[in-house]
Length: 168
Image (cartoon, rainbow, N blue to C red; front, top):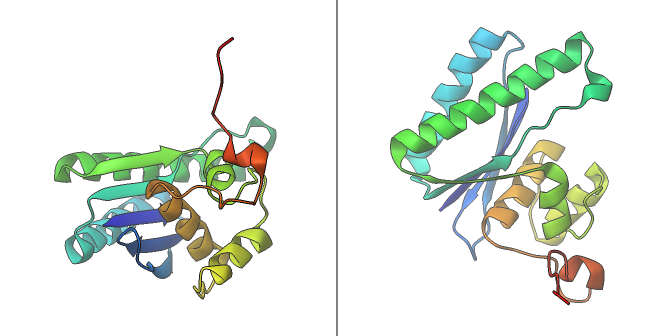
């Protein structure tokens, strides 16, 4: 059972077993960092009690120095705080984790690391899902990556061969 989250103020969730269609949901959290920390941890603990995942997955936050104004600093603090909470909770529960950069996840699953939100939503719709927002669609892509899904054959030869390096 994989529990995948798209981190941020609006958290997307995809939960389910590999080979089955996941359940999608999302939740908005408060702007205040302290209130967010308490609400987010309680939310994740509730999901773990309900679904009993064996893997916890999310997109790894990264620093974007080009957007490091006051809002960027707050966003960075929020994302790293949520990732830290997930690592801590997973460790306490003995749950394995999966975390990669958003571009890596998107390239691995969709075939384009720079896939835009409309492409991600289209990918989820093609799978027969009806995400109510882009956060749920993002969580679905993370869920796919955590479950080992790769680019479908015929999509992109370059994407299919990503990471395959031959030594001379």
